[in-house]
Amino acid sequence: MASPTLLVLEQAGPSPSSPRLGRLTGRARVTTTDEAGLAAALPLADALLVWDFTSDAVRHAWPGGGPRPRWVHTASAGVDRLLCPELVASDTVVTNARGIFEEPIAEYVAGLVLAMAKDLPGTLELQRQRRWRHREGLRVAGSRAVVVGAGPIGRAVAHTLRALGVTVAVTGRTARPGIHGADQLDRLVTRADWVIGAAPLTDATRGMFDARLFGLMQPSARFVNVGRGRLVVERDLIAAVSKRWIAGAALDVFEREPLDADSPLWDVPGLIVSPHMSGDTVGWRDRLGEQFVELYELWAAGKPLSNVVDKKRGYVPMHD
Amino acid sequence: MASPTLLVLEQAGPSPSSPRLGRLTGRARVTTTDEAGLAAALPLADALLVWDFTSDAVRHAWPGGGPRPRWVHTASAGVDRLLCPELVASDTVVTNARGIFEEPIAEYVAGLVLAMAKDLPGTLELQRQRRWRHREGLRVAGSRAVVVGAGPIGRAVAHTLRALGVTVAVTGRTARPGIHGADQLDRLVTRADWVIGAAPLTDATRGMFDARLFGLMQPSARFVNVGRGRLVVERDLIAAVSKRWIAGAALDVFEREPLDADSPLWDVPGLIVSPHMSGDTVGWRDRLGEQFVELYELWAAGKPLSNVVDKKRGYVPMHD
Image (cartoon, rainbow over all chains, first blue to last red; front, side):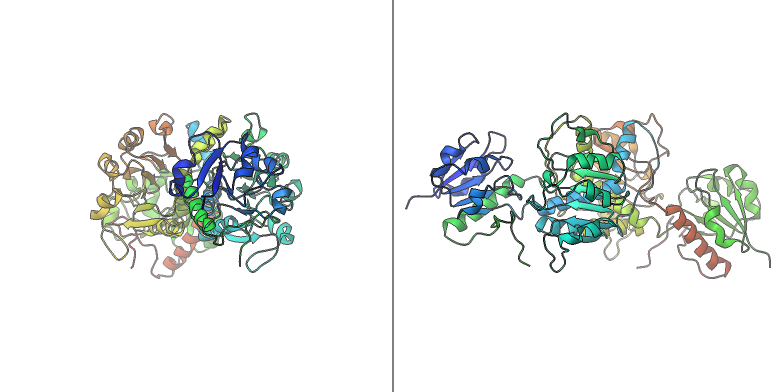
């Protein structure tokens, strides 16, 4: 029996998939493509690995003619760049990288919360000026956070903040034990010290952090987004931070990435900008490769896959 | 019976003791002095509150002639600025502000550890330059820390780092259950990712963080000092960070405070300098005042005081 054809979408760069897929030698015919070659290669592929998870190419190439891979795996938590109506309607199974990014992101958020509570950005700026200026920090223990997003990332963030003594409410699409429904968000943000965006990008979440929601927050509140950039109306966030509707914010994700050098976001006082790195810790690409190989082995053996995305919802449902 | 005379050492400034001592009205004759007046006022005082805990004046004035207060309380954790041989040899009881600073300092250290693991200083510098440059962070969970200092501050730091999944060893003067003796420090630092200075300043700890100890640390290790500045040989730390013997450091305390504007410490790449603020969170001076009033009530009633310093050792012993 011929080995399945595995198509890998990747761009030329320092982190190719090939060294991480060595265990597939002899068990898959691996071909790689860049964005330009994707449409032509798709009909020949049994499975597609989206190693270049920053690409929108799948969404654009998928609706074309010809057969389609039976399985698509993306080396990312979010699947919003991938899904188009034709892929959603198809029988193709989509899986994601659930399990790799949650705990690193939770640590990153905890670091931002503590850094903002202790005004580390102010300390570093004063250090640059060689100025000794004592300030009072905030206690993190006893403060209140709302984590928007009840998937594994939101839950990991909640767990880590709770370990620091923060009282955390988590909101999701619908209410479940331990999770507040989206209809509770307005009420919860009005008394939160920290509002954390950790939701998938779907029709229900796109642009949810807007002037209205920032307007409900306390002037002492701070906002952190590690979900997807398009959860936030960036223009509204700039206004909210600039006008001191809220005390500060940190964005790791943006409407357009990489962020343009002339974006106004770079120099809003009180806003921390980082380059979509919250989940990426040393060895992460190796872990993404190992995870894909394990899924491939299940798939090739005809066994059920884990990390299967509910394509209509746009994320992997939690089973509790 | 006449009320006791309470002398308060404080400097003119925005945070006087008087609004915090209202509950003592009618129960103490409260007089305040600055450093210059301390020597003349000491013989008249039954108790001394060192509200200006940055002052060395007690140590200098105490050896003079005349009666001395029977009780000295300092609104700080460290008592090194206070103690002189004559005070140590006297019957005067010394108490400190144990209980106020531990948890804020633990949060501050956790914030520094996370910020260094995720290279937040690098992110803020790149933001200033409007440069999008992805980097990989380090995981904090699973890393190893040595906390030098087994008092309440060291223990609080250990507790908070453990909550983040760090494997923590605590070292103290002598080995006890859960605490390593000072003789284990060399061995422990050789494999630590984080070395935290949280010890009192005593003859045994002065200058302990020197070229020899930095030389034992891993090139990937980072050092944080929230204890006392003189635990560290600053010249040696500058060399260790500059020559990349260690990966980075953060100092909140210094040999001389405030740090001189021309100190070389301000601009060592990889070194974070903050103005002795790790324990100071909003409301801290109110809490210091409340704590003193509670101790005063015990003292005036002839009851045993808590937070009593072992003057020979130079800190409040732990009772476990």
